[in-house]
Amino acid sequence: MTSYSAIAPGTDLSDHARVLTRVHDAVLAGDRPPVRPRGVVARSWSRALDLGLDASRPSAREPLPFAAVEQRRRQSPLSLVVDELRQVLVSVADASSFLMVVTDADGIILWREGSPRVRLRADSLGFMEGARWTEATVGTNAIGTALAEAAPVQLFSAEHFEQAQHPWYCTAAPIHHPVSGELLGVVDVSGPALTLHPVIAALVESAVKLAESRLWRHHEHRLERLRQSARGVLDTVHGPLLLVDDHGWVAHQSGIGARDRVEVPRADRLIAVPGLGLCAPERLGEGWLIRPREVREDIVADLDLTGPPVLRLRSDPEPWVTPMTQRHADVLVLLQRAGRAGMTAAQLSTAIFGDEEHCVTVRAEVSRLRKAIGGLVTTSPYRLADGVKLSVVPPDVPVRG
Image (cartoon, rainbow, N blue to C red; front, side):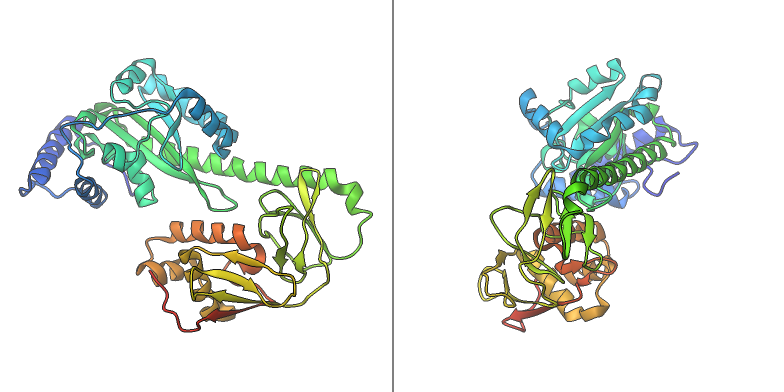
């Protein structure tokens, strides 16, 4: 039994469903329930009520057109691993009377497979490809609540907000890119409530771990292909350089200390790399060759908070200015204050949100920050890279949570 399971082994599902119905009705009526709902359920119901959702009347489901779903599938990294998810989950779906559902990070259902009989029942709920299953759209459900909580969620029967979903169970877990930490979507298993088995949660967890492992291998294979395709050119180029993919991940380096990622390269702008200074990316096959205009030991920058946050390089005459979101500026201020000791995800979570419960959000934010400014920030722990000197203007601006 996992920590987020909705039932324990040996639970009488029919009796438990009846109790949960009384709990649901009492809480939504403002009365005292016979037992308290689980914390994850209570929080989600509260969010649904704050949104003004009506549990007795399902909101309209307007699925995206097929062409839009196909486009999202092509753009999603999960398309690389959906076959592995099928092998783990769909192979037992018919016998177990459940559906495998995979969404993107917006909660849009991209793939849905499994028992034909259960698919027909799901159609009546609008639980189909192209539909958005966030809490804001359909109330408390495992997909939307997993996105809201940034954690795996299992819901049984009347733990769902909408009464129409009470005949169902659902088990969902977020799936992240193992390299960047970016949230890619959610893997969900759903079926008739009275068929829920305690092993379902472990099955979903295993599927997510397998998919993330395969994504890591795809990343490694892509970098290796880039190295092989560029080998002839690299043998003729002298001096410090990096070979990176379109996302800034380093496939090869020479004459420079270890780097795992740099700012996402673009042909129309310079990028700053600690140890190299400002570089002009050059397209090389499926990747980019990064070489310095002149080697610099230090990168000196200002984080200007006098208006909308911008990061401005001072150590080079060539203009280099990058706009920042306020959250990214907050992270940079915290890392500047932390110095070489840096900060863990838990420490950043506490500093920004007031607790350690937002580590997944922090990792995703830092991943997006590193996508924008690359190697200026390093990981394990998070800190400014060696050779980066950052000043904040004005220097004593409080960090916003």
